[in-house]
Image 1 (cartoon, rainbow, N blue to C red):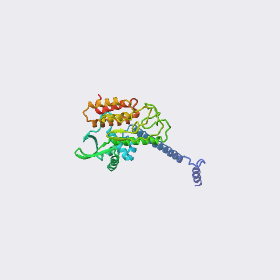
Image 2 (image 1 turned 120 degrees about the vertical axis):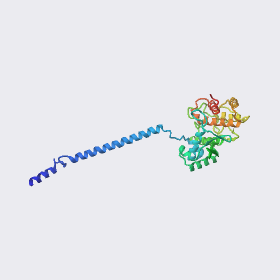
Image 3 (image 1 turned 135 degrees about the vertical axis):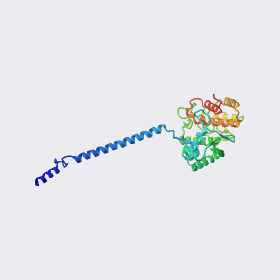
Length: 325
């Protein structure tokens, strides 16, 4: 019996390391550690694969909304700015064929007809938020709304008020310039709104260092100013005639467009515009509306235009009129 007890005690002591002779417990610990490492690596791999999948989706997904900060500035409201951005999208010509996306024509205008609930699919705005945002934009004179039947259902129709839109757009860009260039070096023109560094087609040095205040008024589509350019422009060394343009609505509109894009060939531009008008069946006022739309499109693409802005404007105008083959 004493011998049995002694053998049991020796087995319990093991080899003097404190571990049992057969090492079973140590092997279990090592196995547990390896299993934890395998699980950790597996989780890390799954996480890496998941992130890689997200990056691939991010690169290829078309689930986006193009939002220019200027639209938020124009609306002075984030939600209204998002809605305005989408309204502008529908008013711009299609990239596929250059034709207008708007198909509904009522009372002499093309309208965007969209049910309140449909905005959620496009820009994730609820009907209540849409109503509030439309109210803001309409109060600011940026859009016009009216209720007509669409698919036999009374639906709010929306269109951009070009004069009000351009006024708000110009003011927002000018305010942005003032924020970016609070103090300008004397005799230099800021590299601001339409003219990033290296992309100006004309001398950037201004002729006068005297500060001038420009107040622009629009009456029946005419841009008049006490400076040589509309409020969205800066003076250059080019001399301009301050005499108000003579002629009808088209001449007045083209005069304003030419000055806006700083093109000296005002008279030839008027002649070219009248020739285009004669090729259409549009009334003079309707033609001027197309002119203003072409101006807006050209201005939005300003930084991508490497040649004459006026030549690009006329190309857009011909596209809008359906005169380009």
